[in-house]
Length: 397
Ligand SMILES: Cc1ncc(COP(=O)(O)O)c(C=O)c1O
Image 1 (cartoon, rainbow, N blue to C red):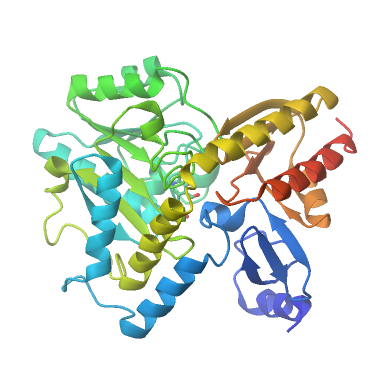
Image 2 (tube, rainbow, N blue to C red):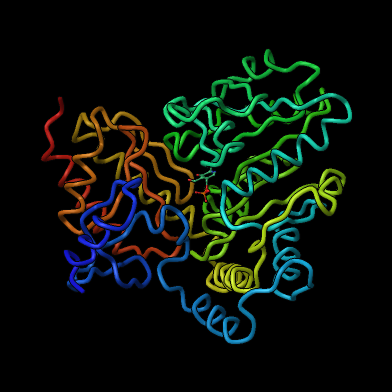
């Protein structure tokens, strides 16, 4: 089918709740994807952060192919090797005495952790959770209520009770919200959808101390930052601040749907049979894919690559900043790259697409790149050349 034929089917049969570019993708390899007409695109935003080791990563392809011919799905009433091995791999790399729960997405992982926080807080009458303005935690009601952005609540209120919001980076504001009903603080260590907002020095440490002081759980949403994206398995390891629980999804299984929750054993034990479940959670295909993702990152030594890629983007954008007033601020941590523009980023994204480069814009004016850890150097430079050309030919308003 041509791209236009597929788009025509979508127009008639698929609900229009996504803004889609008029391109139909059919295959991918590494940091490149191909459309139905064979046109190649360089992808600096592979799978919205899910394809952290590129498209069609060979070890993941092989692991899924092997697993699918053995066992596609069995429910969690049985033991299965891939889920056990994945839990062990994730816990060992966290260096925290934790246990795992598996689901299929980031929002589900956050639903699980919200329940876990309440299950731990309820015996002492605590149920409130503090989250941060401009956060993003997902689209189901618990995670959406935790997401402190009114634009996502509009029209579907009322939200779940018990969430209070503080500006990201403002420790005093978070401290003022704490009362004897607060059971947890939930934050992304680096805000992703909110614009690649890095935590100010001492902020995460301050949240840890605040939680310790009041007996609250500190929870990090590592759905976007986790699995090596920032150069360590988990972003918290960059800051030396250990959470009581963290959530994962996106890159966890190299692009296969998989979500997870790691919680310190003393909190995790509140999730007893009957409290929570996910039919497809921890299924053998997703777990085999996740194990192959971890294997790839380790065998190809990709963790140090995150910092190299980040430094290369930082250097190129700093040079561009001297040549155009459009760049206001550059925020980089590993392969999380945010460039705050003085204008709406939509025309920049469209102009890059015309040049067969895929990038993202978030929060109206932040150019966001979440490139693969195995993005080759020449592709990185080509991408920067294209972005530079687009920025230099765009008029500031
Ligand atoms: C930090 C964070 N948490 C949660 C989510 C929700 O994940 P999902 O779309 O898999 O439900 C996202 C998605 O962008 C995210 O960036």
